[in-house]
Length: 308
Image 1 (spheres, rainbow, N blue to C red):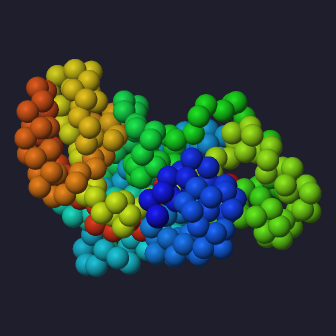
Image 2: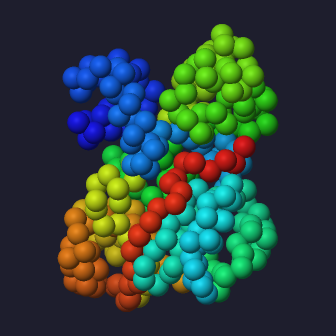
């Protein structure tokens, strides 16, 4: 029942409770309670996401962080960082990975220096800056890497300055709760009801805000997710083409930093991950080395960054 409900939400995050209930043979009230439970247990989030280019955000990077001492306090501090749209505790080469979205490279450097490297306990921070995305499976709402930056369809090249304060107030509510009712949107934003409804419909219709349903696969799918850094010998295109054909690989990105390519993989279990990293990847001509960081606990899912 939960799986059916999540599929419906992935198709339309703002579908009415009655509509969702009709799709799963439950009453609207029963669906409401089921969604409350799924959200409270961090299985899903339904949030409003704004295209990064609209906000003037052009620089994206994954940070691989090693710590001295407990990792949890550092993960929580990064979770509160507005520029971070992903925070995951991992096992393997890194203790924590965090995806950061910045206005430009200088802004990225400022975030690293002022908000990451200065955190007590951060021993090392490796920056993997994205150059291009060579594979991204749009059907998988559970994908973690590149989430906040890449899922939107193309939008007109506009500036965040074109959004007035009423638009911004409504977007901030949607970023917290993509299913907020129009009455709730009006009350929390201070925008009159009729105007709030009209503005939100315009933002959604124009693609300036997209309602996305994010599933935490560690809790919902009980799958094994991991990031894999790949070093390549020779040209990248031949290796990328082979990687695109591997079904367990959801994301392939070319990066600057310690790796030539950064992958996100989703496997049925640890044995499947071992087969993928130990045999499949190492059997691809041109793959020199791989390093894996297994996702243990996802603290912050993509799309939830507050860049406005």
